[in-house]
Image (cartoon, rainbow, N blue to C red):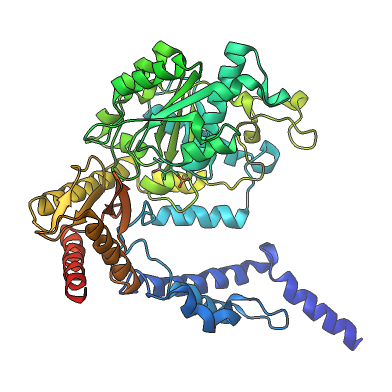
Length: 501
Ligand SMILES: *Cc1c(COP(=O)(O)O)cnc(C)c1O
């Protein structure tokens, strides 16, 4: 008897671990306690503790799970505070200006919590019902903002990289089918595909090349087109590159324009590129992972003119719509092109049971089980609103401009572009020192020193082989003084390097 009772006790305890009708109070308690701990993360005075991998050596036992010890919620949260919350990078902190990570909207966090708790898998109607309609509506909304036609459609993806993958895949398979009658999805590789060429600016995101390689076409299938002094693709150079490839016997199949390059935030001339794409009868993809959301602004909408002619579009809500990772979409001008990724599995979505009113989104995705990432965007649009999100984007753009004007004539800095979006690429220079290699070393020293000390996180990048620093501004609550404070740290750190060396 005793044994039975004990077993039951254990089982009761285990049963409490699930999200269900019997665990309501435990659920509430866990979430409330977790929220208490996460709040401490918001009170940090630095963006990062300054700890390196080696500093976690003494905490190895916390990282590993011990099969003999079971923690309660308080203990587990205390461990994760010590291990993670007190150390990790805080994107909301005004001294974090490195990469395309945004502070997140509170409504979006609520959406994520609801989606994770309910755990909807968005792949088939019978696993998601109205969640499918919500994702479709978010897609319809953004397609309408982009002024894409009625035939347009889209799907949520894990990020810009995956969206760009889908763009290249659809472009390739569509070209192969349209011009050579090839069904690559059914039959696989054909030699002519080795001649297919993609064109994008030399400042395009690396995922274009990476995806071309993943598709078996190699980096060399991507032809980089030179940019002008504003870091925008040069249309005449694009035409020349296309002609040159044709003369070599290769086959241009797609142009990828970037709306907001990762480093410079520059917009390729979409309308002109759209015309060129039409002329050569090739796929026109717009990578708007960073700049696509600026369709919601008054300041930048005109830079996206031409996107309505795109065959496909990448947009990252987890960059410029202040959503937690992941939240991203791939849009396509004509929904029928999703046929290149559709698969009809007997156990999930047999073709004979296809029902337009109750769609199975798996037919549009390269994933199977997929998170309900559209829900956080739904909360954000309902509670924050698209107009307000647009105003946040304008704010970070003006911050970048302010910063540019503040350092443009400073002898200690060299700027290379006027920000078109919300990044600023520049470098610290010591007046009188002309050698690039010294400047490279000092700028890397500045970046690493500020990071290691937890003072500020600034990114670096290369332009014409030289190292530059980069601010990526995505926090609308930052002020110019916050940024000038980092600029001051950069000057002081740069100055110290000279003294010590
Ligand atoms: C960030 C970025 C990507 C990649 O997006 P992920 O969401 O990180 O996969 C693609 N293109 C551009 C222009 C980007 O800035």
